[in-house]
Structures are given as C-alpha cells and as structure tokens.
Image 1 (tube, rainbow, N blue to C red):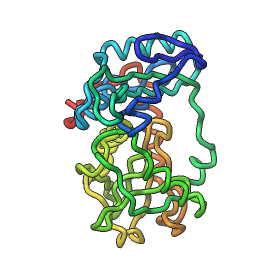
Image 2: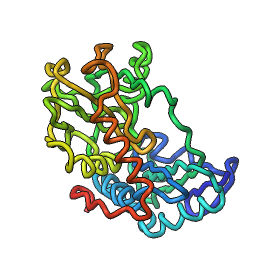
Image 3: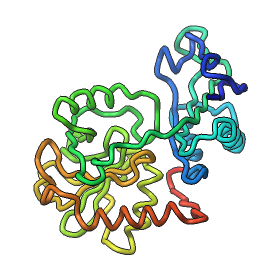
Length: 286
C-alpha cells in the first residue's frame, strides 16, 4: 500500500509525520473523504473545493494546488489499484517551532485504500441514532477535530446506536457526526443547510435528485417534532443513503424503511452509474 506524505510516495512503514506537527499536537488541520465508483473518484472536484474552503476557513493555506492534489490521488489509485477505493486527503499546519504557531510549510497526506462497506442489514432494516448536545468547532468546515464525534459515538454505542446527531441550543437536529441528516414530515423533505452544518457532497446530489419528486425545505426539524417524522435517513460518501428507523430508541414513522427513502436510494444508484456526473456548483465552495 502506497501513501503520499509531504512530496513523496511512500510505503506504510515510511508514512510518518513529525511529533511537532500541529495536526498531532493541537488538532489543527482539515481533511476530505471521498470514494470511487468503477475506479472513478466521485465528484472529486467538489470534494477538493470543500477541502480548500475548509482550510481557508481556519486560516490554513494548502501546500499544493487542487490540480496537483487530484494528480496525487490519480497516481495512488494506479499504484494501489483497489477495486472500490476510499480516498482521504489531510492537510495540517505542519511542524510548529513552539507547538502553537506555524511558519513552515503545511503537511499534506493522501491515502487511497480499500473501501469497507457497511453491514448490509443497515440498508435493509435501517439504523438507530441518538441525539447529542455536544457540538463541533468550525461546523462549516471539515476539520480534524473529531473529539465530540468520538465521545458522542461512544455514548451512542451503549444505546445500540450506529450514529449520533448534533442538536443545537434551540433543540434542532443539525447533522450527524459523519453524515448529513434528512427527514420527511408531511411529505416534505427537510435538511439543515445553515452555517451550523457541513454541506455534504452526497447530500447535494440527493437534494438535486429529490427536487423533482418532493417539496424541500432547507431547515432543521426540532426534537419536539420527532414523533411527527414519517421517514429519515443520513447521507455520506461511505454511507450513500442510509435509512434511519429510530432516534433515541423511538421509531420513526412505522419503524421501517419508507417508500420515499427507497425511491431516493434507487435514484442515487442510477446516478452513480452515469458515465458523467455534472458539476454540482455548491455555492459555499465556489
């Protein structure tokens, strides 16, 4: 398995960062994650635009151009040749002379490795999620600061949950720890699209597919409305469209995967088989 670390393609044993790297000692960094379909990186242009936005949002300048990073990804795909690949691109503040400031070149790490599919039962029976009052820092950006997500998931697993959803002070459901959250209420598809959440690439595809079939409101649902939800699901690169059939142990709708969710799953599968994926032109990342 080959990796890219700061200008060189290296083996696993050679893939190393300094103990003075700000990504390690302060959690100062950003990343993006995507996957391939048939060997093609899914909407890599949009993922790289989001990476650049995330970096700029926290004052980090990427050490390579987006075109150069795309070439690095392509090279690793050829070197590693996984059938279905997961791609992770990480940029950190690099080596810090005082463990806080940065005046040297940022670090860039790119990994391409076999994608591990989720359990099939998740897609046939749905998953249980929990809510958490923990919150992400810089929620518009995909930073490497995942302590709240890890803690929330530890708590969730004790309740037999496969995901956790952040709620804000208004008791609104924002997003999951590694996913965007969607729900149907009165036939309308709801999802939060405010500055309190990360705009997902998969979620943008889903919104475009859904707009021809359902009314859409880009606003969060409240905890008080959970009993009114008819269907729910989460989206992410490694999850696609994953049905949610219970929140905090309480069933959503009839507690089974709904017809609207199944339709969107079919539309998404048809979409990924297309020979060409049109640019999404996500306003936040333009």
